[in-house]
Length: 210
Image (cartoon, rainbow, N blue to C red; front, side, top):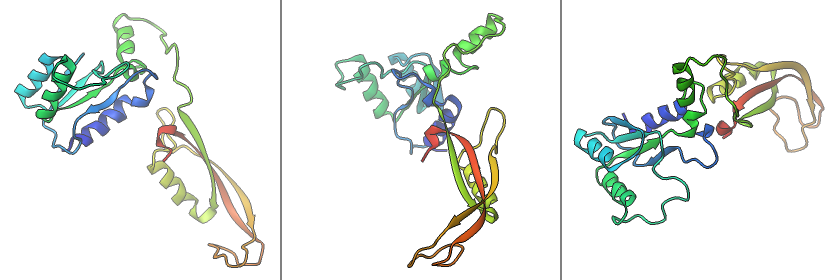
């Protein structure tokens, strides 16, 4: 298994796009093409954590707090603790991943678990993340509508809560005039064509726009 497969799983679970603007969660350091040998989980990246991962032959460290934070590291030298850790990590082929405010912002994340432990009732997210979803609207011939829907779902569209394959569909009629030199999928050049079509609408996470 490649490290990239583990990173993809972590991204799908902790959703880095939930993080606050000032945060630096996600895959922070390493070669995603290396073979995965195991992970060490810690609150913070410290020299002791790095040495423990080296001693145990693990090549991924997953932390809550990102070790590259704030204004960022401008210089990487062995004169600083962060620089020395980075050198040790790279020398030993160890990757680093962090799930910080994105984990805090999830109902089952740090704050959610604390609320459960404290037996808080009717708790909710105080500042829900906004503008994470988009809507795609497209039109296609009726005969191709199912294939288009399945392609959209396969790309990650149509997920709402615990439901998948969600879409809104409206039958109608589209018209167009293929101009000279055109090669229309249906209809003939120079003649107005009316085609039974379906308007398909789906919700998707904006991070999946491409």
